[in-house]
Structure formats: C-alpha cells, structure tokens
Image (cartoon, rainbow, N blue to C red; front, top):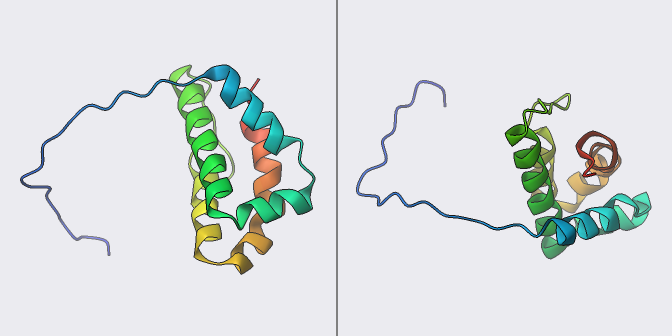
Length: 112
C-alpha cells in the first residue's frame, strides 16, 4: 500500500466540537480499570463496551497529548486503540490481547 497517493475531493470540511464530562469519564475509567481480567475480557467482546473503552482511550490520549505529557506505550501513541480494533475483528483476538490491553489501560493511560 505504500506509495499510493490519494486526494479528498468535493468534501466540506467542518469543525466538530466535543465536550467531555471529566467526572463521567473518570467514573467510567475507574469502572473498567478496577475490573478483574475475566470481566474486562468479556467487555472486549461486546461492541458497545468496546466502544466505551475506545472512546475513553481516545479521550485520555487527547488530554495527555494536549497537556504535553508525551504519552507513549510500547506500540506508540495509538497502540492501544490499534489493539482494540483487532478485538473487533474477532473474539479470538480479544482473548489474545485482553491481558495486555487491560494492563495498558490500568497502568499506562491512567486517568487521574
């Protein structure tokens, strides 16, 4: 796929604004971070729960990068989100990556 050039044409670019309720995000983060691994693994297999985890990860990474915290996990800034997409691909991937994702979520991204 390298070397392919593309151009977006005929698109209206818009600015989308999001507001985040920090207290709600912190509550949801704590809910997932304090789960035991088996329950967290089950959440990775449910699209709505996986979506919540992905949204929380994106929000936290955005906040940390905005505040110049230089967040990096061993897969790069978006390694965790990349693994979440693999969980969407198959439940087998969720089983394989669950422990590592749970560790990154609890220790590396930590919302304080």
